Image (cartoon, rainbow, N blue to C red):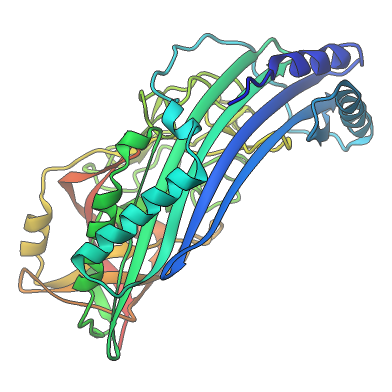
Length: 447
């Protein structure tokens, strides 16, 4: 790629802002190149490449925030952006929760976050990789209809603040997924498989295709099951959704202002002692790693849940200030547009002592949920989900696949009802780890 200078325009904007009698400001410039290939029906539907470049300014005056951005790094456009942000700040309503911006801190370098192969990937090359996935599906069984695709990106960013922060970052990422659907008369077998990583060599496109086909074929012969309250075993694809349903409720401003179902859980036991979760943004080569967060605060390992007890929420500097605690280094900057939120990095659930086979063998009647999404109401904690893929367990054995099965309840009830956590699990993107988790009971609506 061509050499992109982000430091000079950021420094230029910061110099202008320093003369404007502002209380605080930050300037962030970012470059990104992304490509995506969509698979739909019998093959590739659309291929697209996009380059984005811009600079954003956040300015504070008397606790009032002004935000402006430009998709040009020309001097005259930078000057206009700076003036806009400063003028907006001068008339903005004061935010009583605002306490400033973090100062500079040293952070250890995190290795393995850039892959030149991903950066240099062309649409033609990406198309070949997608076809490799499809061919792998076809090698197991022909005749599928598809949904899925590939995405790849290269990002560079440079941040400078009035408090002395001056940091830069560069990163690549690549993801691939394929979801085949087969039909036999009125019977349907459908599933999906995916992976994502920093480096191209870490994605096995053939494996993704074959596993997706095998999982889809397993779904033939699905049957409805009776409504009731049953144990449910979550495979990593489902347990990850359970954990993220929690993390979304403990991140940033909403939890700090008491607006989520998790706001009152700090320091409380919400799960058995076999359940622990850490978040670590410093793992070399991991998909969500980085030396700094979106505000220039060093990333670190954070214990979120320890032996069932909630140890921390995930904070940026703003939300930490609301509660009078230190930021956890979880600021997320969505681009140069100005918004700074908070969210998890590499999430790892501690492995337990059981195996998946033992969980199944110890279940008289229950459900093995291989594809279940938990999307709770963040305020109430209530959820209603479809178990899109799964199997009936009867007398300790996995039986037929299931269909049209709904689950409902409260997220805190699910954590309370964790019964077993497996030794084995799935590592995703070299950073995330999710085991199998057995829940004592979930209310299910079937036939």
